[in-house]
View 1: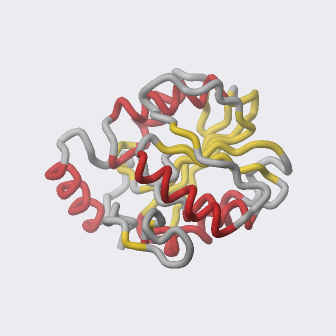
View 2 (view 1 turned 60 degrees about the vertical axis):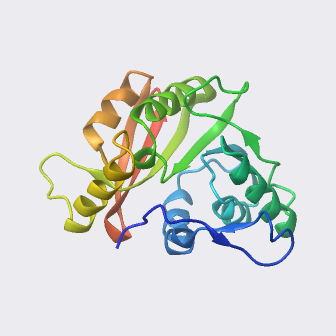
Length: 215
């Protein structure tokens, strides 16, 4: 099973009209925290690109209380959901969401780390290029860019469930689909971001960790 981009479901609690629930979040959030725990800086600002429902932002802000977490998304419905989850959590280190479209101009973003979960395969390739360009400009030397999701890898058999997922994504939008690790790494290199490590994750997903200036 992989973290498919399922339709959001209504949440519960305050601001129920805006709050959304993404089932994949509960399945992957703790595995992601386990990878990030030894990779994020001890303090500073983490920019999350394509925060979606906002559930990851809340979970990570709780897991890393010494870090300021900045959620973002280009979608007004997502921004409203993030704001609703943030209001309910009432965490001092979780900032108000900002509108950020990876393909456009980034709002004077400077970050100690950038996290992007399950975006690359459900967006045009141009969004990946924009994400990498923005990260290359926003991160300080040695800063972390963390990507999570399903990928294809040269010389590694792609799981049948991932192949089926790729077909379903392209049926929804021909610009979507699983990206190859090699293509992402090459595009990241062009922005001064070197692949530090690759981590196999549950449900046929991968974590890709890049560092600015590590080529």
